[in-house]
Image (cartoon, rainbow, N blue to C red):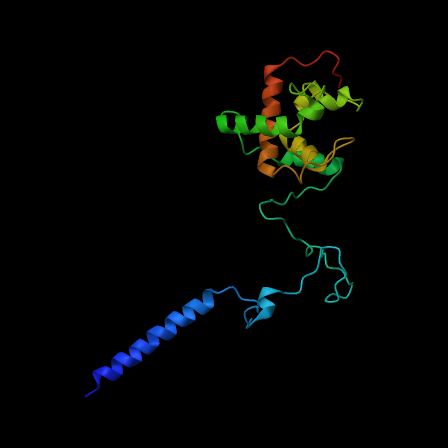
Length: 198
């Protein structure tokens, strides 16, 4: 039979030891704790442009693997140039319609964010950059642009043309299509400017 006095003494001693350890652990320590895996706390790191001995070219910043497509970006199978621009005009069909209110709303938001600086709110080409001396773009309301297929406009937004830069990096493909819907609305709701030529 186990002696109950012995059990009580052992349990009392464990209680005192536990309280003592608890008090000791809570005291501010001048000596840092022991780290069992210091590499997990302080892994070697390299700044973006810092030399890196892990690679043959000594660079830390790596180019993406050939063919990499950024997450969320759909590939655009048409290269720059007039030949691919014409082909895009023949082959691409806008997946969005002006009958969808959310498409019209989003198209207006994206157009106002990225296009009005040059093309103006009404599409006539009188945006704020023109007021500051930048050559004005052609009106989006002119007959030439009205006859342009949606796919060709998408190609221009994607690759740029003349002084207009590519907006593929800033605007997802779906939003580019919605911009085209908005431009068509501008064309339908306005009279082409008389000075707009072919």
